[in-house]
Length: 290
Image (cartoon, rainbow, N blue to C red; front, side, top):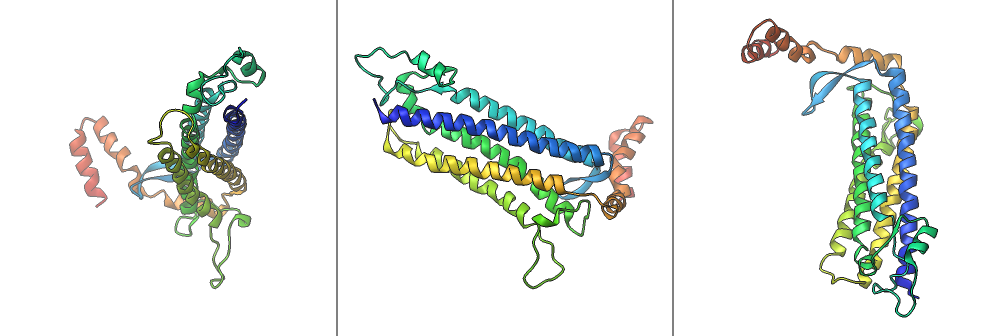
């Protein structure tokens, strides 16, 4: 008997459970986004590049892009689940158990793993699998980071496209008019925390010889921290998206924001359709909006 494979089995079972739960939470966020799209999807808003108005967009196009991002995040979670679905039980300290002929395939099946691991590789996978899991959590946090950033910007008075739920905003200690999107700002910042945990694990496992090293014990904290942060952030974003409104004033702001220059590309292509070269059409329409 060895603590090495016993601890690793417990860790793998924990990781599998947490990845499945993260998938379920992301599905709830996807459902919340789709609900907003069904209710307000036809409302037009500007699309932006370089923080400047670019071309016409809509609530459906905007939030729909995050639905697709979540689909990709779930695919990455599935791929990681498949990768770690290997039982290390029976590998002991990494060299197997002498004398006794342990049926590792049987124990793997009983524990719910799809297969057993080669003994030596079981300890080499430590840190490698954890880094892979945190990388997926980082990808989820990228999605949340962008969604939070967009929602902060679109809720600003200068834009006013959406109204955030009051219970997720705070006031100011001195300015009575303020409604600060503190929770979204914290979600946005948590991406950097999870990214830091990924680098921590990847640097921790470098320059180690094959086999078990005590350094690997220190990978547990960043792993568990990353998973917990990601799950909590997804839960919060579900609540915020569900509570976000497009009021009559918001809809009017969206309408006012649809200024003529957003249709410049369309105007240029209409001229191209009539036979003008794109170069000439581009220059002609460009002069119009200078």
